[in-house]
Length: 147
Image (cartoon, rainbow, N blue to C red; front, side, top):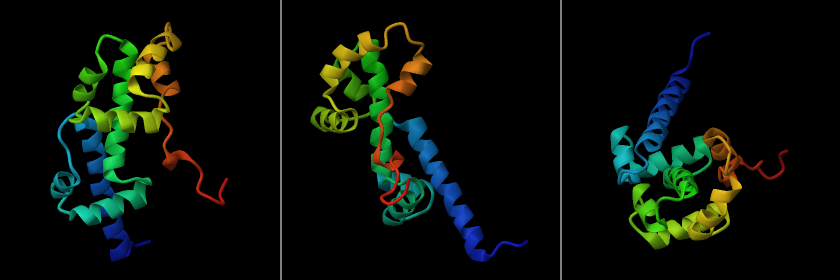
């Protein structure tokens, strides 16, 4: 069975999208924007955004913010950093944007999460607490009309 040129290009595009996703996972605390991510894989920012959304169900920026919020949740559970310190530690430059996105994803402001999470996960191994406290994004919900 031979692959068509279109399917070969599709596989190359998927490999580039995986590189972008892996870079976000590694460098979430660095100043990243869609233009820089796109340059890294020789795509335009618009094309990258469309392809990334089609492949992963969310924009590159949304994926980046989810990684940052997941890491922030872990840091807040430790309890030794303030919300502001956590905000900057995970690569956010605006406390307001960080708090808004955190509240959208987690369902409570970071300061409330910090107070409640320390006691809720006490005694739990970090690998378990990370899994049970992971924010659920729309991309993980079934598509309308599907189960």
